Length: 337
Image (cartoon, rainbow, N blue to C red; front, side, top):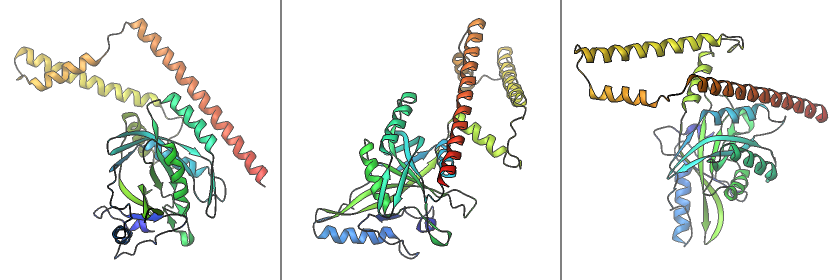
């Protein structure tokens, strides 16, 4: 696969794709970027071409929850489906795009034709925006399309059609995220693309997909979950549900108590004159203490109980949703036979 030939020390690759024109995959000695650049330069001398424009988005940040959502969608795909697609949510800051969430969108591909569940996409988007009003549609994801000999392609003919649909759903140019689920190595490759139309004498000829920089970014809660998943990877049965969660809480509280004792000893030493005071350390301690809210015990108990009830309700609803999805999958398998 062409994407597998790209290395970190090489410039991002450029792929052309359209129902009317599909540029061939690059050879090792000459990349598609060079072929496309020379083709666009030749077209530009004739008075056309859009390849000279610079891309506004230079970096894409992806959160782990997005990757897990894509892999879960791929695992639950219908039998015989080549790939799955979905909507990417996040925010745009200048030339950087941060992808924080994603949801699956049903679609079907038959030859050069694509059918996308537009109503489903709008309904899911409305529900997501009610929970996260600050997120916007920033693009779409897809898994790599499997081809013969166990290989897969990141960009195919129908990618242009889907990209045009999401161009109407986004405020700016959409980002295309590709997840290669072939598992030919011990990694799950991620690729982010930006599409640029190629025109010759004012007529659109193809869409040129240009790979842009991509990196993972985790929030504190996501980092905790990922660390827990990595820690349980050595267990052949995974992380058992019966694992004592109180042990982890006890360890965390012991670490917190140890840090508080260290700070207390430092303050006592400065007051007694046995330790030389450090202005930076003093400011850090002051900012930490001022960030702790002063709450009466009865108010804290009420907040804790309300949060616990909300957590139990969310857990109950998620279990109901999982059960309903399992029943729906069984019904689809039965009716499909």
